[in-house]
Length: 405
Image (tube, rainbow, N blue to C red; front, side, top):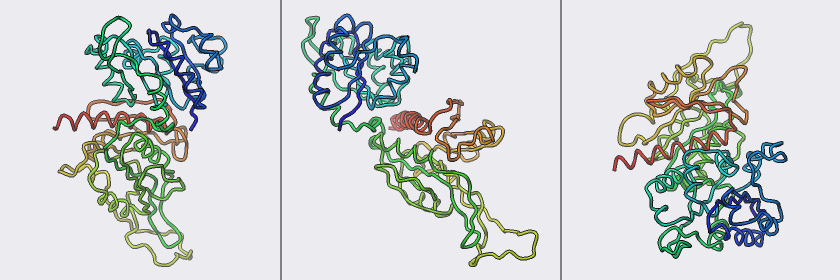
């Protein structure tokens, strides 16, 4: 399947291989957009790139023509995948530490698309602890590395650090799904709850809430795209099941509770569902008729607490349990209290009022509260919230499980 590929060529002797990569990608039908760093311009010319790619390469962060539409953002959004070939030690360090001092590093910081990196450098630079720390951190974030290989180098030395050949990189691109973020969650089992619950009043009416399920479904999809085995326990929604996700349909809070109990052991549980706290003690078997009464009294009883149940200490407790909290006032304080009360590891909180009503919307503003800190994220599409949460969660659970071994 043809992809829109943004190729970033950085400054190294292997930059000339970027020209061969462009030719091979175009031959396979891919649309190739190219960014040349200042270092890359020392090894390849814009004219050579344009002749092979069919489009003029991008070289400047502040371009009078590109910045009319915020060029670095547009370039990252218009691609299905970003490929850095060759990737120098310098660009890896920039990616790790979030530098944004040129067009390439700014694109890499602004993107939410899959990133393939093919390193190329002297073997001593590759083996240096600083570079290896950068590689480990980027891998944990979902960046996929291809190579380097061991072989002869331009400096006359031999060792690991040689860029993979363009043909091998093309094969990796061919096998990478355009919508796959990475495989950072490979082997992890994840439970996600999503949507509202409906608590029957009678055969016609029910108690519900405004949850659409969009954020929970986005989180389930993001985990699956990262290689996790995902079970989604969903209340009533009109959303289609995400690809590669096992969905269990439920209606009531009790049904959701029992479904979660039978999912089996998981490493991560994310309780996004807006579960009703109360249900009718005895729903009517027949439709309630409107009589002369001015008031209708309903006897309610408490529903089982799904988040607190999953968070209970014991051998079956997941290493990471994440709850959600929608609050109308004192968002941070109330959400922090909920985290303590429920005994979960993190709470993802958002405010619900006339100015910020995320239910049914495509965007969300959240803060992540854990035992030691509160991290506020900007207003983002729910898919981006999901992608960030997945990367943060996977990194945390990998660290916790490695320390327990």
